Length: 251
Image 1 (cartoon, one colour):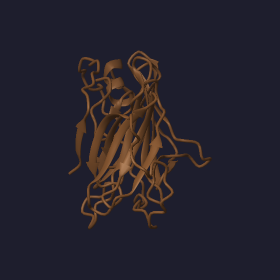
Image 2 (cartoon, rainbow, N blue to C red; image 1 turned 180 degrees about the horizontal axis):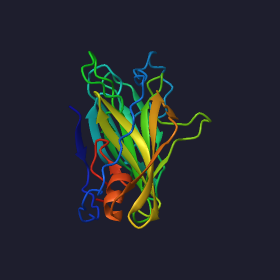
Image 3 (cartoon, rainbow, N blue to C red; image 1 turned 60 degrees about the horizontal axis):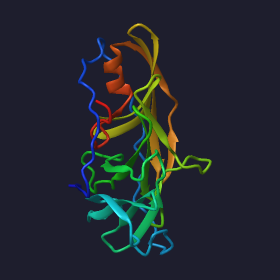
Image 4 (tube, rainbow, N blue to C red; image 1 turned 135 degrees about the horizontal axis):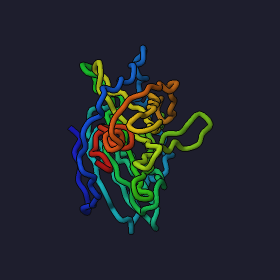
């Protein structure tokens, strides 16, 4: 099981718990095909950034232990800050090191946790876990990205098809945006969410299912529906990080 240690305590401002929406909300329809395998298919190339290890003078943050390369041995993932810039460093159980700058949000550090993005119940070999990084922004908002290994065993943030780094947004300030991880049919489905008020307690909801192939992220067409609920309940479901291996940011 992945374990977590932190170098320093952090604080968050809790928002009072709220009631669930007054009507049930449809869940995202599962895709008809399984997520692509993400175990690297090549041997380490020795050309990763950070191959020499974590540099001297780094301010160490959270340290995680879990399998990110699919060999069933625990690897070590370390978040640190150097000269005010957040990094995520991976040391594989086999000895390889790699490093990625994760400059999202407005702080020197980012929060990290393991997210079992490719979870497959009953798989002979459990898929490797991804790293979810969250950067603080203005009050009630945050940015996030995910990191996995490349085919050369280098940890890197996900990127979109054009090559730009993928950065998602979470906002408890309307229109609300979030990240939802929902278990169904032996898998975990990860979706970006949006909620827009259409008057009173009426809301228009959009969910966009995410996939990845190594560090390339792709998206299904958004699914849209309408629901009702209090603003606080809608924020808790669609304007926060829900599941995904960590506690919510705002609720």
